[in-house]
Amino acid sequence: MEKILEIHNITKKYGDLTAVDDVSLDIYEGDLIGLLGHNGAGKTTLFVMLAGLTMQTSGNIKVCGKNIEKNMMDLKKNISFLPDNTLYYENLTAKQNLEYFSELADADKSKVPELLEIVGMSKWADKKVGEFSKGMTQRIGFAQALVKDPKVIFLDEPTSGLDPKARIEMNLLLKKLNEKGIAIVISSHVLSEIKDICSKIAIMKQGKLVAYNTLENLCKQEKSNSILLETKDVEKTASILKSIKDISFFQQDDVFKITSETDIRESLVSILNENHVPVLTLEYEKEDLYDIFEKYYQVA
Ligand SMILES: Nc1ncnc2c1ncn2[C@@H]1O[C@H](COP(=O)(O)OP(=O)(O)OP(=O)(O)O)[C@@H](O)[C@H]1O
Image (cartoon, rainbow, N blue to C red):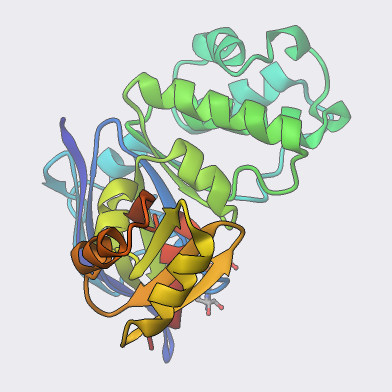
């Protein structure tokens, strides 16, 4: 896969405030990255720098191998940024708005009908944007992001304010665009959505990028220290667990959740076998994105 963006140690300061602090990451063709972080973590600031709308205070960005300082046009040509509050000319139709944005981007406006088709808005091409629902307007936003045939699209909270059906449709559309090879980076506060559609997760905290990996690798790295145990004899199991030192546990229905600093699975199976308690399941509890996110935010 082609490396589209190389971001090396970029920092953005606004006076004394460091909004983005020494962030490095690479973005490849076909990446679908979820960018998470609390309010004020620096997500939007990172996007505006990567879209070439503001200069970084330090660090450098390469687009398709070229440093942007000398090739700002390369950055602007290859990257689209859709802010969370994009405004359209409400008295112009969907088609007219997109033609206008095509002209601004110096792109081929004859492609507008095709873009409307991609985002499922052909039927409403000649309707005024002022009459559209939030979901329809957001589709126009995606079409706008596609106007210049970008290699990467940054979307700032693209599903914010949409109802559940519109969110699902939007996420399907994102996947469809991503399957065409366009790298997509989405900032969102909706972890379940990010988990469902993104292949990589980036987490920002106080301007720093504290995690960047595939969800699978993050789950492996942040392995839980809780074991889930289910046996055929709940009472006997409870009494055995009470006798084991340095663990804590609680029972939920027929499953015991055991917390231990060390891996006790083998010794636990032996003790249960010695006491003739058949084990049904014994496995580490799987971390989900919510746990991982919370962990990064708990660490000082
Ligand atoms: N133009 C600016 N001038 C001064 N400070 C700014 C500017 N833009 C952003 N900031 C500050 O930089 C920090 C990071 O803001 P940013 O908008 O990037 O965070 P965010 O992660 O996108 O937050 P949210 O999830 O609320 O959108 C915040 O403290 C914000 O107040």
